[in-house]
Length: 111
Image 1 (cartoon, one colour):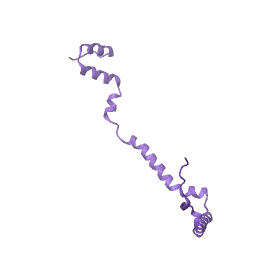
Image 2: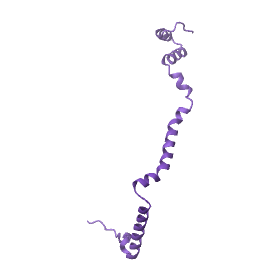
Image 3: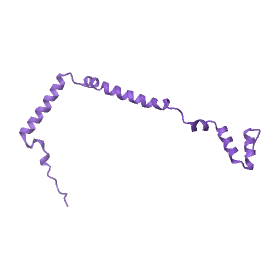
Image 4: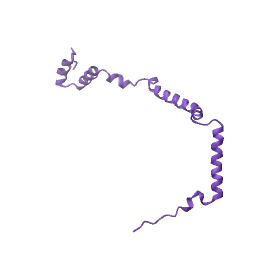
């Protein structure tokens, strides 16, 4: 069993010779005009200089944005593990709490 073959001749640009020649001439003339203007890698880099600089400035601004915002309060209270563990044990108020607080080094436990 052979697969059906698609007729792609309608997509052939050289099917109309006059149109094909006009297309080839227009592409060639645009390429020559660009070459006369000093085209090349260096000219392309110069053309992209301003957009590249704008993108770099935006990336730097986005990178600095977190350092300009104030730190969240929750992060500062969790930073000291002894303080957070002691406050948790004081809220718990079970018989084992006194032993746990004593092992941390707190002298007085309020009940």
